[in-house]
Image 1: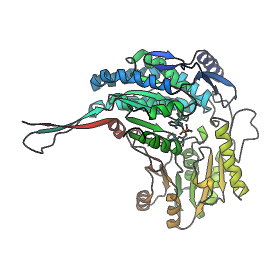
Image 2 (image 1 turned 60 degrees about the vertical axis):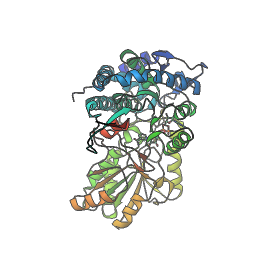
Image 3 (image 1 turned 30 degrees about the vertical axis):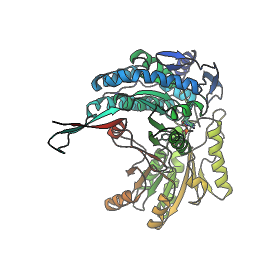
Image 4 (image 1 turned 60 degrees about the horizontal axis):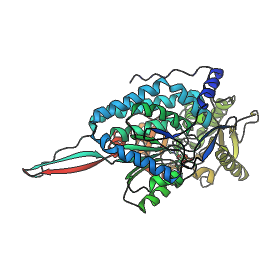
Length: 498
Ligand code: NAD
């Protein structure tokens, strides 16, 4: 793949570009039209860095969402009839168009989400690679023959019709763009619901979609709160829903959908992921991985973040000394500064949530290794310093619940069996990371961990084509792989009586 994204320029040019981008009317995309909410209501989008209102976007309600579903339903038969290779060509054109405007999407994500522009450029790159990957898989939408009798028996894969895609606030552009690739290539039309905290890059994506796709093939609707996405979930004609977000909302979606119809729902939910380090691991390597795996750059606001560090007691002090050294000179800059390495929390609610977990743990006796709250040097921005907490209990809230902030619980261990019990003793099962140089142990432990995605001697990266998804309350279904594409098609068996 030859994906190139131009690196971000300077803080001043990024700020000037953002000012230009924000100077527009933000509208949903329904059919081929940019539309306000029928009520004309809007809601404010706020920058977590400046904490100023930066845009007003449509506050869609159930009626607006139903209009989008109608547009997608009208477009569905034509799109399903379009040969898979031609559908893939549309998706490739979208990827090319995104590549040309990569900086704009990254800049909008930075300004409404608070993550550094450099890392948001990487998100754009991942989105492009994902769209190109699924386009390349178009001809894998194939059935097979079964020699069940002297007649002809074959299966074929057909689209569901309209797919509802609901995405979370973190990695806003990456999810908005990459998660429409598989359903579109599989022949479905899409209604996309971006998160209310970070809707801008998805709305800008609407400009490219409007130019490239036939009307109604992709629709983008924003609204504050659950009203609009709930209407999508309970629409009787939307039979396939792909959701990325929190466990609580995932469960609510399953419940609400089940009241209406039998639906195919895939859920990519949260995690409380463990990094387990053995005595033979290199403390410096473990420390670097614990920081990288926790995704402090975007303030720990990633589902796969390794928020529990289960480190063997014999190396724990060395690992934490390295962690302290690596985080000592952390700088807090504008997310539009190309040199920024640390993002903010997405909004005041998430900021208060992270601080609340830290304060609670400290009151219960946790020792602050790094961070511990808002950095003192910071004048603006909802920053929480990368925080490692030692001396926490494995049964404390900070060690069991997904905080979705830059907070790592350090859990020292000496007995392997007990360590693995702790790893598996949470409701989540998304990722895990194992650090050891003993190959047998690494594989044995990987097999015993209840999680859908495991790194051995690594933490953080995803790989195009390698299935990603959770066990237990971390989700159902696999994405970023051929499984994702095939999950957007349903099998039909045809029996030809010869
Ligand atoms: P969230 O669940 O609050 O919201 C996600 C989306 O659901 C938003 O678009 C929101 O508007 C919509 N929504 C809210 N209520 C709804 C309802 N009743 N019915 C239908 N839709 C509804 O999540 P968030 O705070 O935006 O994102 C953080 C969560 O997402 C974390 O738990 C994180 O772990 C998870 N996440 C998971 C993955 C993964 O791949 N497993 C990736 C990223 C984020």
